[in-house]
Image (cartoon, rainbow, N blue to C red; front, side):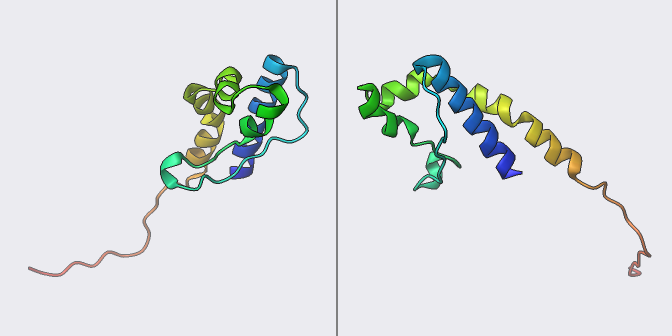
Length: 100
């Protein structure tokens, strides 16, 4: 399921780079951040594009314009699928009780 999430994130970044900068990206790098507090996934693409676009990585990231809401929207089907895949709890067998 994480593969689906990574693919959705890569597609969104790829589409944003095409729309904003006219770049057709073959690959969008995703990696695990060095600290847990920084999140679950990082995209170092703005650092890679900084020299090429002659802009700061921060400016590139802002211009790509992916927000938390975008990520929530992209991951909604994945979260729904995880919840739907949960089996219904069922009890079977005998229950024993101690006399008080």
